[in-house]
Image: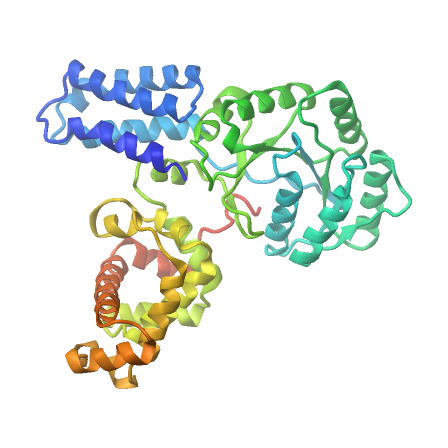
Length: 453
């Protein structure tokens, strides 16, 4: 996510590093590079102009110019202004006091409404909600069957509405069924079009009137850039949307829609879709997204993903081993298994800062098959070798290579990776991440504070 934008913005700031004092010329040169990076990422022109004007005014402030680290001061200003553009604070979903709360999913055809409806239902069910899904798309062939398949895959019920062919009748019947069966959330997947037209708007407007939803969530395709911003603006003006879910930000999306949509429409981005799997839906935290864009990583999101995959006792035991320097090759193997359960590993590595001890890992391209090979190599070691890696001499390496069907060079590489990971994790454990992990394993993590209320 935002890889190209990250690289170009970091490159823009290289010119400020090492300068004893900021000058208008050096600031303007840097901002020209930032401007090009933002425009190439398809950020709205008005957003770019507003952002750069504010950054320049603050960067040339006397206090900033007198700073011992002008590049860091300008980076801080850019970070704060980008967060403002994105909305500063995450906006939680609004729930009704009357059952069921209704979420109306709207958007153009092909934006991913049906899959996103399923992702949202899964996200809610993991937070002790009881969602029910219903499709009111009576036009697209097999649209209702598609949602039923999604619902089955995630283990959430879907209202079939057999014999009903009216979107209004389907939605009202589903709401009654949800109330009768004790479902506290009804997610309504509406029909889309290839473009905005009167028929589409009239239908969704009537659904909004009849259902009185707590949220009207626009599902927008992040890969189409400014077109997503324009459609979001029109949907909001005509329907009064309450939030946006940006999809497909894991692909070739340049990020412009994410950086523009809140400023242009005034509507908060509530979630982002970062993959095809049903668990690839993330709460939109403006500060975390900006950290990713600036190459600072997103360790809090990484921690939260890890929290879902690692139980409390395992986390405490891992933390103890890191603190006591007893993290073994067997632990390394177990951690790799757990990492695979978090999702695509390149996404996980992308959450690490692109600086310091994380720099190489954050930019790594991970081959999932390589992890299977690593596990085979570690499994070919004796229990003693897994406990004490320093025992593995040349003769033992040859035996391990034969037993795992690999080469001595590949065994050497695994040992180097283990030492590097051990060093990295130990460094993190004694710093911020270690304290955060302790809070999470004690049951006081940040997950859901903003979005699950």
